[in-house]
Amino acid sequence: MSEQAAETSYAGCGLSWPEQRRNLILFALCTGTQYLAAPVLYVGITQASLCDRLGADARTSNLPGTLFFAMTAMPALYAWLSPGVAALRRNLGLLYGTSAIMLGILAITLSLSVSDSIKLGMVILQGGVSGAVMPAAIGLLWEVMGRGSDESRRGLALGLAFGAGPLLAVLGSLGQTALLGGDLFGWHFDGLAYPRNFIILFAAGVPVMGLAAVVSQLFVIQPVAHEQPREPLSAVRGLLVGILLMLVSIASMHAADSPVDPSHGATAGSFSSEQVFRVLGILSAVGAVVAFVAHFRSVFQHRILLLATVVTILVYAGNVIPSNMNLYSREALGDLPEKYAGVQNMLRFGFKVVAGAMLGWLLTRTNPRVGILATASIFLLAQIWAMCVTGPWYLVAFGIHGAGELVGVYAPNYIVSASRRDQLRRNMAFVTMLMVPAAPAGYLFGAIVDAVKSSGWTALGMNSTSLGFRLSFLVCGLFILTGIVLAFLLLPAKPRPEEPA
Image (cartoon, rainbow, N blue to C red; front, side, top):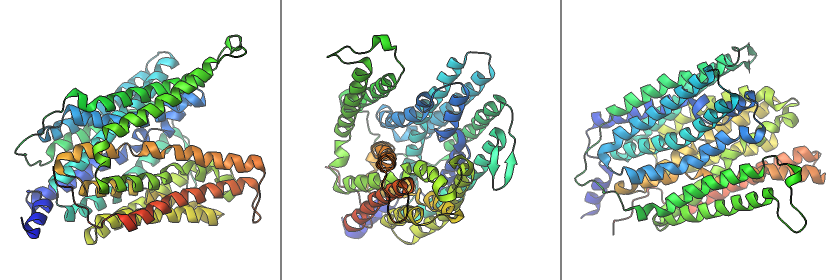
């Protein structure tokens, strides 16, 4: 096959331009619904606040978010259960529909006269269900993009989805503040009484996800000559073991942090139950990592995919720095961090609107590697700004950071471009898990602040607290910079899939 013929075989998706345009617009619409429902689908802040209302401690209030990340391994299992291209639309509808049903069940549960422990369990379950279905839906959307559009035309969908999409998240956040109460840019919202405010908030996500389920059935999917058969159970043994060990790790660490009766403590020369559970949790987590690596070993055997994975994990360290950026508000702005949470989120999504449109246009004029380099550089700029600026202008760091978060769009786009179409579903399932190895960086950033404060170090007129936060921003920036250098030096501008054996 000639070079020109090979290029045409790869780049052409086989659909007409009107059909591709339809797919690109539908991709943007589905992504927009996810942004609009962000207050309940981005599991973390809202669920933790509700758990606190239900009388949970901080450890339990973090369980919905923890379980969300733990369940991001499920898309890989779905990819094995239903590998057929013909089932793409059906599976998207099921995933969005499951999310809508879970939100509805939670809203109904909150309205019933049942114990707070039951309501708390449903909140935690909603976090797990969201982690199991939403990343899978996003992965299938990327597969639709890979199959239903030419690479050169994807910038249209990315610009629309991640330019206008964050604007819907801003509207969703505004609605959340109106329901729960708070201040935004000088506007004060009293909010509704509890629990009606949370009931309406979660119930509002039901029609939004229902709309996504309907819209997803309108994609144009070109049939394949031969459907990929389901692999034998032995092919996903490592994945199943990894998921099981990960859940055991979460349960063990939760048990290790649970209060125990002092009378049942460890005797001399013995181990306490807390120590046993903690060791079990750590060993289970290590075992889960080994099992997942074994399952995805074919990804790591492809040089470009391996390098793109390393780059993505390094840059994703920037996703877990916002907590420190918010906590630093006391030093940079002279007031409690909670007073700035609303405006920080508004800036975060607002900047994303402009950046999303510009980056989409940039992709139509350049290549997939530029998308990674551009977003990672913006991420790095946010850390430089946070290190150097104080006073009201410090808040701009959150806007820059929000624009840089679009690396979560352009890193997967690069991996789509480097993937064979028969491996798209597996590779996109793998991409959804890349936040998991980056997550421990958040603990590292917090530990840096605590270590500097406890040591009482000062430098350049900064007290120990300010120095600790700025050092954490520096370390985060070094992670991102390393990813940028590796991408620039080692990743090809236009990746091509490996030839099948």
